[in-house]
Image 1 (cartoon, one colour):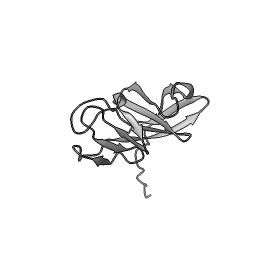
Image 2 (cartoon, helix red, strand yellow; image 1 turned 90 degrees about the vertical axis):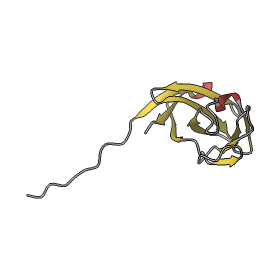
Image 3 (cartoon, rainbow, N blue to C red; image 1 turned 180 degrees about the vertical axis):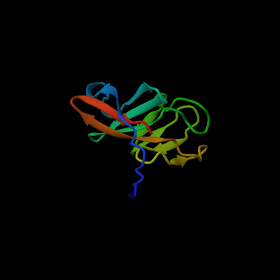
Image 4 (cartoon, rainbow, N blue to C red; image 1 turned 180 degrees about the horizontal axis):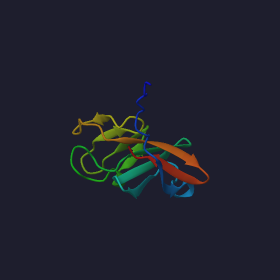
Length: 112
């Protein structure tokens, strides 16, 4: 008899906030068991990034949103909300992003 190998199960979804807590065009910091995450609501969609500038270890949640990017207030580095890609120096390394799902009034992240 052949046995089929199966991949490990996907990371579970974790509720991190209520949808009401994530205000449009604002940055909302949340704590997770994977560390701090910043949520951003832009044009009706919520994005989640690691709340840590890759240039230096400062919180992105202290920054500002502009044109689909979050700007680190400390040195001006910018990151794409969708991909986490660094779009402005001095940062060159991307930050982690997380899958987001909104359901039953809650914001859930897949914290892989």
